[in-house]
Structure formats: C-alpha cells, structure tokens
Image 1: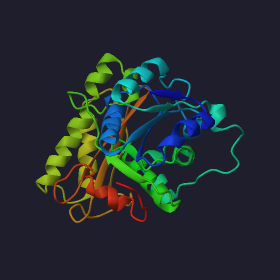
Image 2 (image 1 turned 180 degrees about the horizontal axis):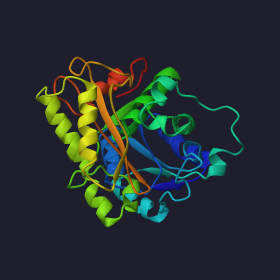
Image 3 (image 1 turned 135 degrees about the vertical axis):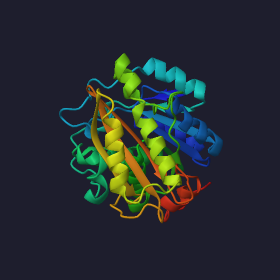
Amino acid sequence: MELVETVQELNHVLRNHRNSIIGFVPTMGYLHEGHLSLVKKAKKECDFVVMSIFVNPLQFGPNEDLERYPRDLERDFDLARQAGVHVLYHPSIKEMYPNEPLVTTTVSESISKVLCGKYRESHFDGVATVVAKLFNQIKPNRAYFGQKDAQQLAIMAQLAKDLSFQIAVVPCETVREEDGLALSSRNVYLLEEERKQAVILSQTLSEVKSGLIARKWQTPDEINNFVRDRISTKPLAKLQYIETLSYPDLQSTTSLYDKQILVALAVFFGKTRLIDNILFSAEGESHVSNNDEIQITSGNRYRS
C-alpha cells in the first residue's frame, strides 16, 4: 500500500490503473470495522482500491468537534494496509483548499434541511464540496458509502447524478457491535454508562422494524411517538430528532407500505451525538439492496 499526500502524487500512482475498475472509500479516518467493510466490498467489485482520510473543515460548524475529532494516522495506515487498500490518500487542508474556496457545492434544502441537516447548517454543502473534489481527483468508477448515514448516502447518489460524475455510488449496510450499537468513530467519546445506554438506539429501531413487518404502524407519527417514548426511558439519552421519511428523496410521507421509507434518529449522550436508522420497504427489507445501486444512480454510465 502506498501513502500519498498530494494530488500530484495521486495522479502519478493512478495513471497506470486508469484501465482498471477503481473503487473509492472516502473516510475521515480513525478507522473501524464499518470502514473496513466498505473496503471489503470494494475489493470484491473492483481491481484497485483507493481510500481517503481527510477531516474536512467545511462540514463542521463553529460549535462542532473539528479539533476533537479522533485522529491516528499510524493506526489507520496499518488497518488500511491489512484490509488490502492499494492507495491511502491523506491530503492536508492546504492541499485540498490551497485558498479559501470561492466556488462550492450547494445541496438543495429539500434533502439537506431535514434530519441531520436541520441541525448542522451547511454541513452537507461541505460534504458535497469535498466529495466532488475527491471524485475529480481520484476519478473512481465506484464509490462506497455506508447506510448508517442514510442522508449522506442519498445526497452523494444525487451529487453523482446531478453533476454527471460517471461514478456508481454503492450503498453498504451498517456494521454493528455485538450488542447492536452502530460503529462510529465517535463511540470512543462515550463514558461507560453512556455506552451501556446507547444500545437503546438499535433496540428501538429493531422494534420499529418488527412493527413495520407486522404492519403495526399506520402513520409516521405513530412510529415517531413510539421512538420518543422508548428513548426517554434512558436518563442519559437526549433525543435530537426522530423522522420517518420516504427514501431516497427524504420527503414527508403519509404512507408506510407502498414505498421505501427511512426511520432515522439522532441522540446525544453527553456531548456525543450518535445517529442510526433503518430503511424499510413493503417487502420487509431493512437495508439498501444492491439492486438499489442502479436506481439511485440512474443516469450514470459506469463499468461493473
């Protein structure tokens, strides 16, 4: 595995692989099994895998944890190498933004001002801008994103479609710890009792899924109220939001069983903010299947 830190180095390494299928795994580092599962999927589907590690300042608000965000490049290098990554791209902020950007990417409020975007001003504009830059720098055929941030996944698929990137955005299932907690780099911030109580997120969503399969719920409000009640049983949990929306357009819906829906929540434990979700269709699927890759990236031509 090669570690490269500049666009020039990246171009030099990738020039001999342009006839290969290149898979791309974008991350902010502090790798865990969730990230490595993306690599595993990329290696099955691609000839050459590039992972990026870049903590993007454009997607952090003034009161968010940019400086606190965990970083350990040496550890990440070892994990990426063991996972079979071919190139680890670790640009500096100066490399990515040599000057204050005068042109950035703006995401429509219809998909950016719901869920996390309602509470993180300009967050998805920052994500879309850096991913567009990485897409241009790496020029992959396939890019891998986790379902845990389902809003980000939907926006990245729309980014590829609307800006005519010839890239397949590939959804990957959420990876969880043994007790169900979704893996996240921010889990390291949780205190012991917070960590114990955090399992309520996955437990509640599992109950919602069972209720949907049994057609227990008739409206999104019923689901949302059930989740509020369940989360409130944990004294250290502070619910930021619970929303039930159609997916991937992220719009309000009155129907639960004739389209794919997303049930997503964000909860604070102390200063640590955790997100989780389930995706559900009338067929009972609670994840984005590989068939949905074509649906959410329609309009793009790509090699598979």
